[in-house]
Length: 156
Image (cartoon, rainbow, N blue to C red):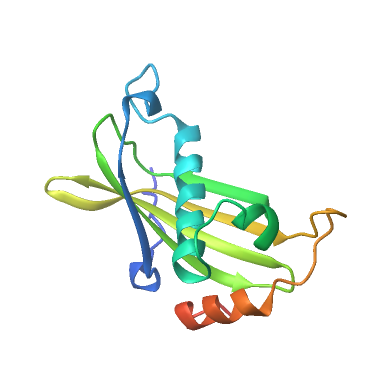
């Protein structure tokens, strides 16, 4: 039987972090975090990233100032979290396209002696859109510059 090797993740590439604690409403009948909850957490981590790196937080930010639509989300699970576990979601932008922005996330769990255990890895691509036509348009230079400055290590 061949042993599967986990892909190595360079956590030093991730400069942004969002922390949380698993709530009772986020666990399923097996007592583990429901798989959909991770996607909500990752979306919140991306949101916090954009607020922290590119703009001021306000209610119209994603409807008027930076309307982004998710076009792809992929998540790979390695472990599970349970009620009251602490977690940390690392976020980075790995690529800025003409109209798109590619995010990578790593969810880490804190299990006492097994600190920073990788729970899952995720990738998402979001597209900047014209809210009237719903067509993709160029990602604004104002935000592009802030993200490029913060990341300073895009994949080639």
